[in-house]
Image (cartoon, rainbow, N blue to C red; front, side):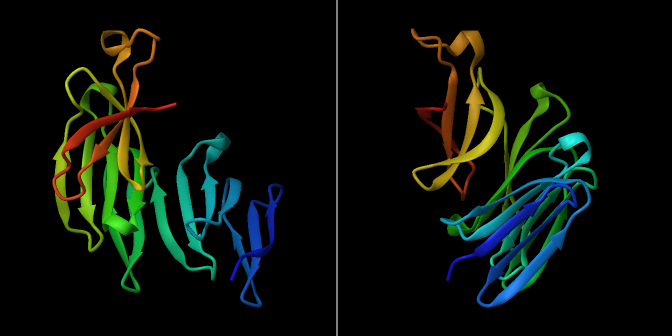
Length: 185
């Protein structure tokens, strides 16, 4: 099954779609962007004052909340085994859930120099906290080769001959070990 008649109404901060013969409607305060992720099978919505990314929502095609990050309330919520799991983390800079690897990853911290990578099992159990590799700063979470990664900037000290200094570091989902992989663009 695929989503049909997806409609993002920017004036009313709402999104609606049809799935399996049912119409789903979501209205979210300050919502400013919505899209369909066909590959991973979810509806993505961003909301926030003045187009900031204060809240990120992912809904299943049938309208159930899969994942939510709210940087204004310091809450992350996700669905695991038909239950909603919630944790609180201050100063969330980036958050990503990797269902295939059974892990939630966060970058948290007040300033660039104190950013940490944190990993949680899908049941909410804290697994690890890691600092960036020496000479690099965390930027945002991503994926590489269908596995969790964090994009890091090495600045002028880690720049190659072509002026590139931004790299993907693969994240071991059990230990949080970071392994430098490919350039990030």
